[in-house]
Image (cartoon, rainbow, N blue to C red; front, side, top):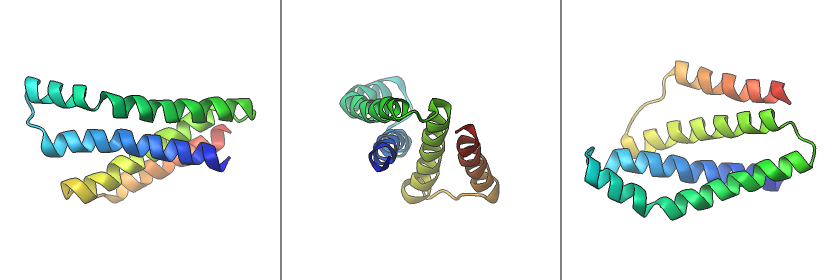
Length: 111
């Protein structure tokens, strides 16, 4: 169970870091964005492999897949929010925190 959670967290953090990094460091035009996305393909593949392994192991252990996927979505959303504060100097509103909490609560209910 701990390995499943760790794989989901690491994979979600990697994908969120790629998204926030693009917003922070890449000019919003076609060629720089295309170059960046082609550069980070190996990282995205590794992150998705981690998440796939977690989903497969959770299914093998008879966990409810919708609950595990919901948990992953919640972790990813939380990672995006935290990284946007740390890297983009953004802020998290109470509504955002409530929304993330509802996602996580919904994932727990789906199990």
